[in-house]
Amino acid sequence: MLSRRNVRIKVMQVLYAAGKVQDMDFGSVMQLYRKGISRSFELLLFNLDAMIRIAGFARQDASKKTAKLRPTDEDRLFTAKLYDNSLLASLSENPGLKRLIRAYHLDDMIDEDNVRLVYSDFAKSEEYKNYVLKKGTDEEDHTEMLLFLYKHCCADETFNELVEDHYPAWIDDKSLIVGSMKKILKALPAEADFYDAYRPPEEAVKEFGELLVDKSFHTDGELLEIIEPALKNWDAERVAVIDMILIKMALCEMMYFPSIPTKVTLNEYVEISKLYSTDKSKDFINGILDRLMKKLQKDGKIVKEGRGLIE
Image 1 (tube, rainbow, N blue to C red):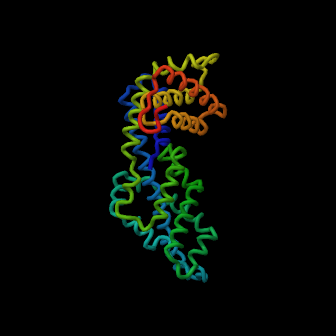
Image 2: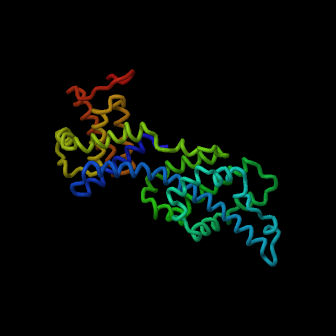
Image 3: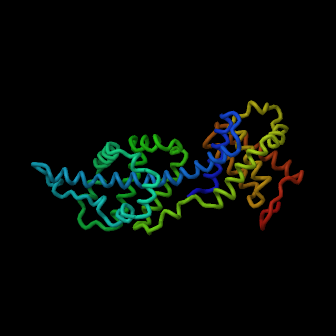
């Protein structure tokens, strides 16, 4: 689920947090990084659990409609098929997913009022009304409606507040989680261990991410010495904190990750700066990194290995 860019962002956030806390040791920094990685997978499980429970409210809706003294024709035709279909059942009745939800205590985070509010707003949509009244719905109809439900959730204020209350990183991980959720829903019915494919990959998290944390933390002073001459008329203390962190991380990649092309590194950190720093940062970072890359290559401090990487 996590790409290298996602991991870079996690590392950047951890280094930024470490800079705000005086004398944070390396063990604490690494622990913070690992917790952030773990929370991304937990956040995906939370979204799955929340969506299942919101869909499940269709049963209560059906009970209320059939209990009316004077039900309308629409009330009589209403069914809880949003929840009572084989596709959603492959999630709601999945033993492994249930175990994970219990292990992370996710059900304790979602209260009935939030579920009701999100469902009630969703139930007003014409798309849902047409789906409920349609006869002979097939798997494609169920998939389309479940995707529409999750799309509604992502735009719903109550849902977003619920997620942010428990996961402050929701705003950073949202595109990642949304992409994973869409993939899961489109692939329904889910396989027994479908969630394993969305666990943080070992290579990206440990071999890349943990080493990046290590090098960025332990060579901070050396990196600053390399950067300062390239700033020319700029004082290092005047450089935006995020910009300096991104430049240092990029230098670590260039010098300590022989299998990653320098151009890939440069482009990645410029792209991240567009999301997390100022409007002028992308040009500033691009210029500084290009200058430093050429200097380090000339000094023999950047050595790339592998076919197509030797420059």
